[in-house]
Length: 113
Image 1 (spheres, rainbow, N blue to C red):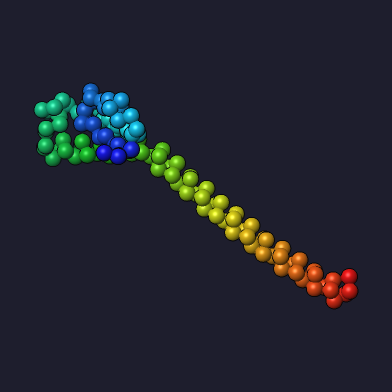
Image 2 (spheres, one colour):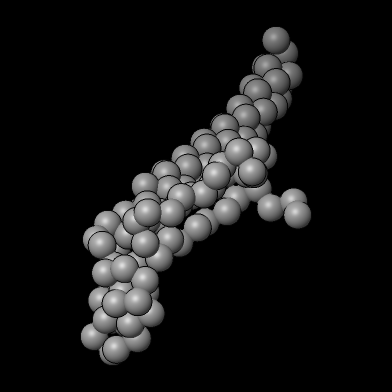
């Protein structure tokens, strides 16, 4: 379908995605770090306590997987900002250099050099 990034949130620790079915996609699998208690007692257990536990666990699992990606993006963004700052400084320097050369030519002209 054209999707090249798939994030899979697993509901248990036993099932995995067959990556060969999606050869052109990057697949990030979020697998629960703790056993969820099986299908009936875990996945389908919708008591408030169990739901909160699964939500908290899912948050921690996703954060563990996505935090390095987030940090890498932030570093890249900082790098881009730094490069833009250097480019602005270089353009400012070139402008100042042109103005200085122009003044020098005028002084040389006035002095007859």
